[in-house]
Length: 174
Image 1 (cartoon, rainbow, N blue to C red):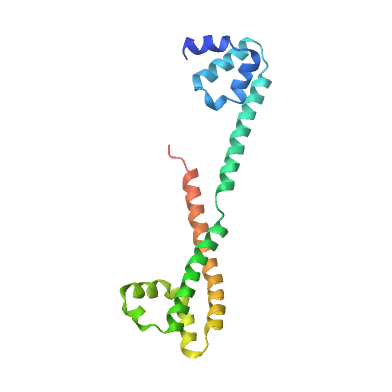
Image 2: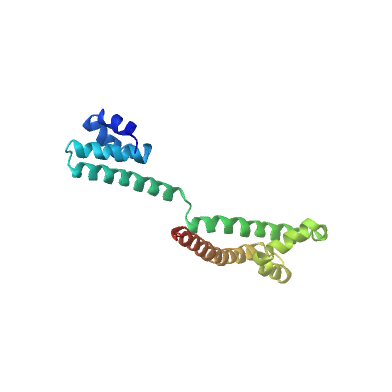
């Protein structure tokens, strides 16, 4: 600790010192905080004031962590959005391709890629198309059930991934 901080803190009033130790604790260098604590001890400011100041600083940090956690999207919501996009696009692809029977789409490379990508969401719908003449209603019901199943699956994956990631963030290496 340098004499510079000791001299600066000696010039501060009691109120300023307590504000430094409470409100502005994170804005100062560690040596300056130590100098402010030592100055409080010299002035016989009770440790209770310093402890209260430290506690207020910790509460501020805790409140900031809570705000950060609130902005993070929940596992259920994230899995819902992913599933909605995947199954929704799969449903649109199934209805568009099979309802209009566009044979050119499957021959194109892009159509083949889409077919393979959306196959898990539409393989039951494809079977319905071959067995029922007006299959749009049945496809939508089947896709709703598929949506619920895939949503549960993706939710489990995201939950496990985030739990594992949180665990690895909490483990500190010596």
